[in-house]
Amino acid sequence: MAQQSEVAASSSWPAQFLHYVSRRRQRFYGIIAIMVVMLAAATFIYGGFATGIDFGSYVPRPKDALPPAHNSGATGADGITHGGNGANGGHPPVQTQIPVAPGTQTQTETGTETQTGSGSGQSTTQTQTQTQAPAVQVQPGIPTKIWQILLPKSSSKSKDNFVADPKILAETPTWLAKNPDYTYTLVGQKGGDEFVRKHFGDNARLVEAYTQMPNVGMKSDLLRYLILSAEGGVYTDTDTVALRPIDGWVPEKYRDKAAVVVGIEFDRRDGPGWTDISHWVQFCQWTIAASPGHPVFGKMVDRILASLDDLVAAHGVPIGKLGKLDSFEVMNSTGPAAFTDVVFAQLQEYDPSLSDTKDLSYMEEPKLFGDILVLSIDGFGMGQPHSKSTSDGSIPEDALVRHLFSGAWRGDGKKRRM
Ligand SMILES: *[C@@H]1O[C@H](CO)[C@@H](O)[C@H](O)[C@H]1NC(C)=O
Image 1 (tube, protein in one colour):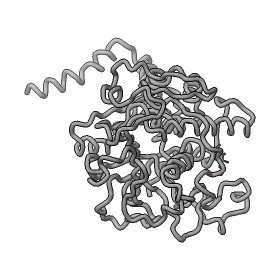
Image 2: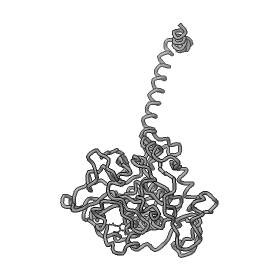
Image 3: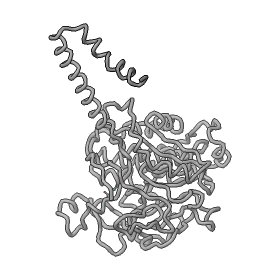
């Protein structure tokens, strides 16, 4: 009874409303009402597209890629296909040290000493281990922090009040559940801006590069290196699944030595070269673990700034006007090709016998070089149809993370899964 009268009451309000209007007006208001509903629906749908986010991850695309032999000459001619042309990819040796950690003395490009970070106690672990010594002392071990980045696509009209579909974070609980006592931070646009200002605010060039980044994927790339440099912990893309607790990532025997953990995403082995992959073995940057202040991230920032200079020179426009870059330009400026150059150069510093990333091919188990632990393909790169990655549906023993490859960084708006 009560229910019925409620229904009756709720269905009577339009009747009451319509009671006030004439027949003719009823039709008029009816049309207005339909238009309002249609407008609302259109806004909703458009908003859904406009707020599409970019995972900011560089997924190797061997699936789409063709071995050079099958490619049209165009690809080879513009220098995109180049199988394993050395660790440095023709990049000049890193000259400058960008601030790597709060309270660390570092050198800027002009050779003047600057001090980064106020050391205002935002991270006690850091301030204890980072001294004013010119050589950066990096403490082994990974701080108990997990970072993800969620930035609105550059094209989003509603960038300032960007709200993502919660489904984007569907895998995040795997990280939380497997890593109690780790702090978790989802860095958005505002947080990213603030982070850069707070930790690197006195590096005008870097702030400019961050602010002007031609696309959100590149911005997300730069931000992850800066976060790991200043705070350390684990950075992982939002489309990754945690398979094992982070505490167990570094094998026992390396725990007092490893300060950075990187994974392999591509290992050419004895196969042909792939479009857009310039190294024989490429590291991924969808997941990276690090102790704060490791020089590899400062060098990565230097590399990004150098790459931006090169791109600006090549295209003849300022950073902010670079607009659409091709996928290799992105991968080779902020993405995995650039990351591989820098990490491999660091490995070579530790082990001069390394001459090419090919020397890391066929790795079957994690290997420590200096303080950098390199995982074999399944560590971060399981489930891919290449590189001898385990992709039979099973989860191998040494798999730590599963990447779902749902990033839409190429700007074609299509989500792809492998
Ligand atoms: C990658 O980028 C670096 C830095 O901009 C540049 O020196 C190098 O030539 C590029 N590599 C290729 C293969 O284009």
